[in-house]
Length: 231
Image 1 (cartoon, helix red, strand yellow):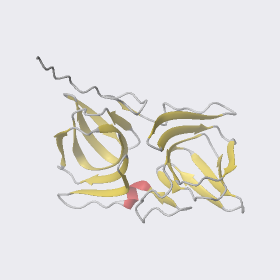
Image 2 (cartoon, one colour):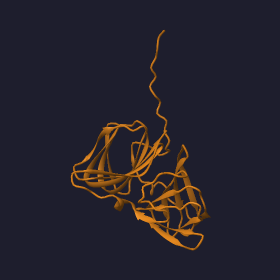
Image 3 (cartoon, helix red, strand yellow):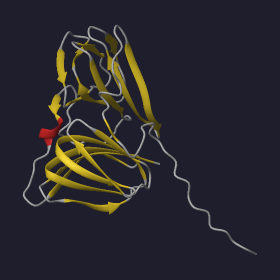
Image 4 (tube, one colour):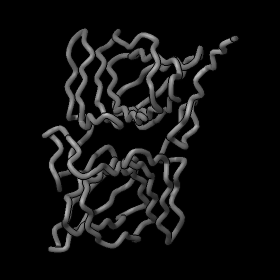
């Protein structure tokens, strides 16, 4: 008998194109008078979508049994509940939607945000509180000569992590068992991916494919968020 070893085929769970620096904001420009949603990933009960809202458009208030994270890429929106309470969410901020309560969103100007829809009873860091608006890059500090990690969501099939890199620090080349999406939050870094180098700055994004070999080297101080989707 002859046995053959087959190379595992990489299955991708994110529709973004890997191996290039891009901007969620510039690739999801709103259309006047419209609201647009783009499904990026849906797996194991978690989903990721980008929303583009033209100025003065809105998404009606609805209630859900699970929380969502809204990460603002550009613009300014107002989240409103059924009691008239409002939360202003601007570029660089994150909002955790409450569960079992009406919540809607209205665009004060052309706006783009990423929504991570979680599952009921998802374990989240206590720093994320329902109905609160937080500045994402301010949730994690820098430390001299160190890389600091903070898990905002740590589930078997989804991880959302904040990382800060002091000048001169970085991650050696490695591969992850899932697709990953980088949100650059502060500063600048060089991403090595499959043998090529890419410079990424605050406000830009980068996608790694499952098992794609990559590294991160800070140019000065650098902060990022990393969304990892696992089987």
